[in-house]
Length: 248
Image (cartoon, rainbow, N blue to C red; front, side):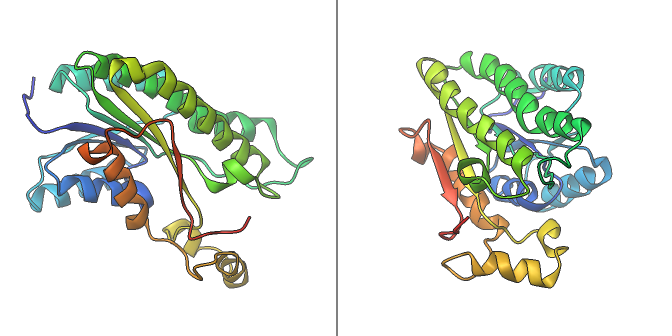
């Protein structure tokens, strides 16, 4: 077992975008990271980069979160290595765009498997470990679309709405064990994915934001770090938007 006095935090979807920014923020706070994503080489490269900056060497796990057996094995390994878990960030997600009448069943299955089933499974395993210490923080990344919906995003919005419900329910169940559960709902964030949008579509999204710009992954990461830390110990069951007053 790798004994550590640093908080152990598991982040899914850690290899890029918001997940990467979260890991970079947490690594500066002497956190023992467990970074999870499908892209193994990208995880390893990020782990080496963070370690070179002086952070504890992150544990990496290249798995598909649609595989529930892989999730179970992941938490078993975390417990074997560290004997504890202090924070969980469910950031990984699948975006699907499609109008009703044009959506395939397999696409619905994939989105719900990664965006809903996987976070429910990780929360269950995390809660069992956190309950041993009677403390912990879980942060689920949802979306402004989960609260307000959007044309062409019925499946994605439904999955994020489900995760909002799971967040609020879990917060009520786990509070007696000292575990806080909150959700962060980003709006339009400047990531590799959004930069591939056609210029006109990108401009239209930005025009819907009262602040007149896309958000940054760091702005989301800062809120996640706050919710994981000791300055938010009286906050649970909340869904906090990071959207620059975006109108959907």
